[in-house]
Amino acid sequence: MKSNTMIMKKTIKLISNFTDIKKSNIKAETKLKEELGLTSFDFASLIFEFEEVFSIKFENWDELNKLVTIQDIVDLIVKYSLIKKSDDSEKK
Image 1 (spheres, rainbow, N blue to C red):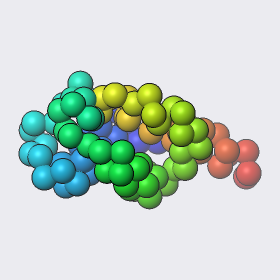
Image 2: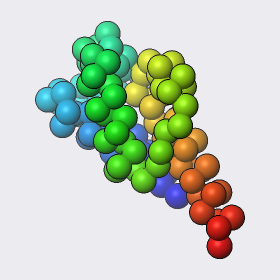
Image 3: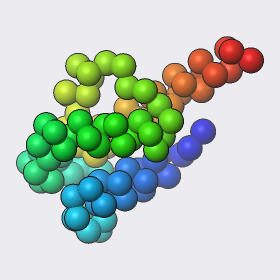
Image 4: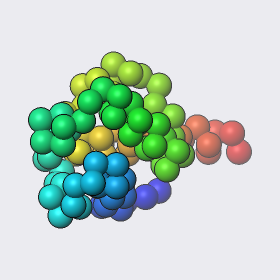
């Protein structure tokens, strides 16, 4: 299981690469739309990127629509990583 710190760093790196905003300017409390200027299309593209990078599958788009900050994304990635880990261990 990846640590929250590692997930945060990787999330910030992905967002930085996607937006061309320096990693040092992206913090846990950074707002996705207001501060990063993400459009709905940008956000959807990033979600698919997170799914691929973290080997998870977001299943509830209502949850995704409630994300406001980078920390919200990290918390949701952690949640889905735990669900995936639980599902994987049940299959063994």
